[in-house]
Image (cartoon, rainbow, N blue to C red; front, side, top):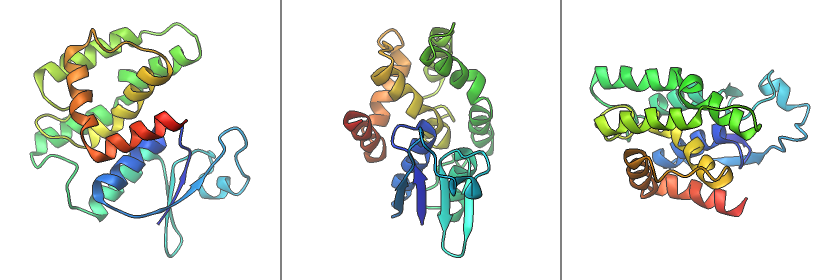
Length: 189
């Protein structure tokens, strides 16, 4: 398995976390996001990473699709809750990522007007109701959001202290080896 990756990319972080949670080995091909190779567009016409490639020429772009694929292809440990309602709730978090966090994170990064504080308040409120974004169990919904929360704190100096439930969630997640590895990636960038 090959992962076309960029260490600084939170979308790639999602896939790295899933691969680590599943205990899957893979080869990394680091992509310079400032100078994307022309051949990358043959693997993903948008030129974006991550892209996962398996033996036999199976190539899959887009982090949400790769995450779901890996969870189905390698079902242990499962990264969706067993409860269908919680799985559906988790999938809503993935589907609404842009409006629930992504758009405002990137606006702040570009020094544009951002309502990231409001988004973090919303995440905090959701995590007051349930220990994880999908409900009672850690899974793909949490993995989908944590790279941005880590980067907001590390790269944009966003203070998470006012968000107690969000901070507790991040602390719980940071104890997981897959998330701890992402913290190391951020530390060496």
